[in-house]
Length: 212
Figure (tube, rainbow, N blue to C red):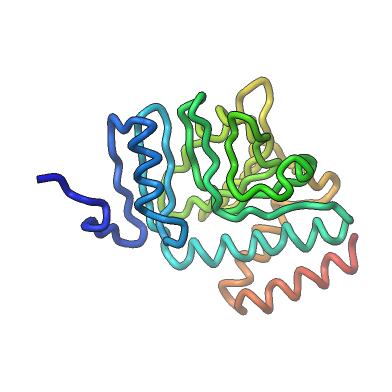
């Protein structure tokens, strides 16, 4: 007897790893899971991970995403925020759902598109992974060619920049040159745990108004 995905119960903070998953099976699983779900997926060369984040994960995702939008609006950059949309390429046998992603320089290429296929569409310019409970698969993003990845862990923010097909650590964000992103994200995410998200975001807005 075969089990169906809807019979599985994955607790927040836990992962399910499946091996030898074909591309068609991966597509079928995505369809079965649907778009309105708490689970996040990562697929690479036949390995599929399904993870359900903890509430603290979601809080960090929201505040960092809001900070990016505030900065992009302040510097006058056009952008599309695609949240946790599935980034996938059958040719590269990769699929991943970031916690947030932004099309900035490549925004024009994806306007009006409801589905992305990275066989033909460009990758997002910036992806964000909140990695409080699991090990983010950087290889997914490297192979898909995402030029900038922010990885937030309990220890703070790391910025990964793609160079010659590999991620290298960076002390600054190419998307926001001259802005101390690591310091700001660490400060205001930590602050949100003390005073709340909306209050911390308002404090960040005040910083932006006074400094940019």
